Image (cartoon, rainbow, N blue to C red; front, top):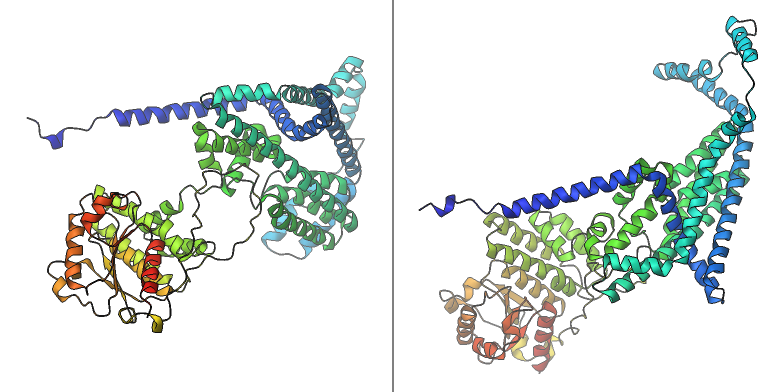
Length: 634
């Protein structure tokens, strides 16, 4: 017979995982190839759908005032066409005006370069020599040169261009933008006209098995996306108006052009404002012989972007767009590579659409994980990961952030204890090595000691800004806001003699290696509510140590258990030993932190174990101790 240890494991799971990864990569490559090679078709359609999102609120407003759908859609699209044509005309005229001043701007730049050459030495001087006057002003060829004469002779000999050639040469460059323009608005019209039909098709595609959930998700996602696009457009327009007025007062030429550029580029977070500021600053440096105008321009953009990004946007819909900063940068690079400059402007709206789909469609949840700003790990998972990584500083930093909004007992119950349960489960499965277990215990002990200065009370709540940019976050991991324990213990002089000692509560560790951490948290919380507690290890209450256990001044005993492993016999025998050792009538509480433990609901099992009180949270344990203390007032 073959040795079982030499029999290889079934390779099918690994093969299936490899096949899934291969299918995902193939699908991704196909999607990227389709986006890249089909951009001539997909870009207008994407622009049309995003335009439909922007115009949907206006169409809804027109419908509410009794205008039929078709006229409402046409009217909304005509308004959009008028705005686009007006902007196009303004941009064209501004560029034409800007081009007339280029020679003068070149002279100013040349003078500044000459001044820089005179004030620098070494490599900087050689560098400016390379980019100085010889490259900026090429001497015009003299009329008597042979090359010029030959060119003139060839020009005279060449036949005159036909009207058809001239029309093709000058009209063809504008035909493609006009065609794209027409496609965008035609598709937007049909998208708005058949809004409900498109919704039904999406429901059929993504979630026909749960019509209620999918309908709510699509309606809510579309509404929130429309609100985001419209709100962002209004914010960016205000930003552009401020920039235009400021540049006009500073004296930078063509302020309207830079205002429009600022409106468009602010759709690209982080880098959009930098791009929109670079050209006006460079132009200001070319216009002003000195440096005051570019410095004023830089200050204008810094103030305008700071106020808009750090005050106005958080006030309206929160600090973020619902996207992680890393995904915003990656999306900008990706869509710029695929679709060029238009992809850069559309990168955030397109990525935001993917995140909304990921938050509502289960099959696409990975998009929210990869691109969204929702934490990838729950607070409990993050807690346990920091412990495994032996990163006490990061662990304490996360605890401090949580304690700004939650009480200490809530943090211990909802994060620390549940993290310890993950560690206990890994230990039972044999994946947590003894060395890792020792590091877990050391890290938890250090964390509890570092949090000794915090009070156990809920911090004052602050009104948070709305965050409607990427839709609701129903599954976003968060720490619940549990009620605080019931105040503090009565003054020591009012307590019964048994409760007047320095440490009336005896906190006993369970026999698990991580139960001592739970006992330490409990003792700390009891002290913050006016009840001293003494910690003793499980060995002190074992069969060998119970006879020497010091129970002086003990009025109540609390035992902490992360897991009784389905066999409560050892807990029952521990309670029997404590009953014999403790003063008669001393209440015994057992804290079973896994809330699903059978001993918390099985009355017969509770009677068999023999404890007076059973709790499943540190908060309930503190309340039980406070209630016992109040019941024994003098």
